[in-house]
Length: 238
Image (cartoon, rainbow, N blue to C red):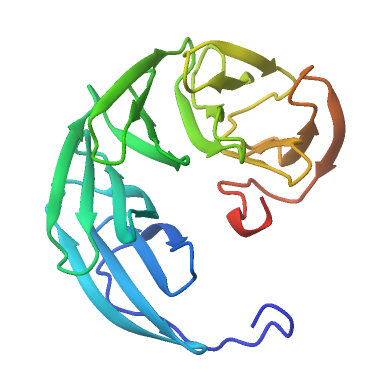
């Protein structure tokens, strides 16, 4: 329970570490991505969850998952170290489409009519809701931790690059143009997100810092120093 901190339920079925979690837009479904190469769906009834379909097909660890609605149908998209992005039907658990990266894929974001994926090939790939390719954005960094802005145009990307790990970029999804960069980090930036007012948030490295910065200018507004690294941002706050 978010208010009291009481543990309500433990969901057990995965056979290895869980790498990502995502709720459906209506909050009725939860998806979990795991190093056991599967995505599991969990249906919520009140405050309880019951096991739903298991999505099998990935041949390596699944590092990212998102749920979205397409024409009234609930879909799942997943990204894996097997270099693939896969689209699934939640009702049947069947795979609908497959897209490929040239290396491991580990990050996803979903916009109003597009999907973004990234991985170790230094590319952000933009797909439509049927996983048909729209465009490829080439980055000098290794983009990770993608986050879509509510305007449907901007995409925030952290970095795992050994050369430019301090650079966090904002891209225009529809043109592929780099809009703004923040360069104040001193380590990896695996966690990124947006505040409701459009402020960009980035973190995720061993510098133990979360930075809030202006998305138009790249200027830092606030910095929080914590006691340990941050790998993810809480999507429910963004």
